[in-house]
Length: 63
Ligand SMILES: [Zn+2]
Image: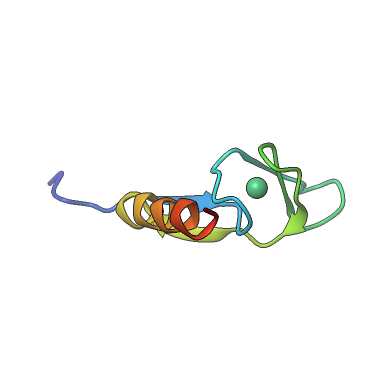
């Protein structure tokens, strides 16, 4: 029964990096991005496919 199950990843809303650490149990809810340093945000959830797309768009918009 291993079909096409979509994988979801949490990502930083600022730089879309998935290198984020949760603060759970420390300051309550919130995440910190290891890539751009953004702190205390609610992560965005993407399927892997959508994350790729969103990253491309981010690159193009920051030209
Ligand atoms: Zn970030």
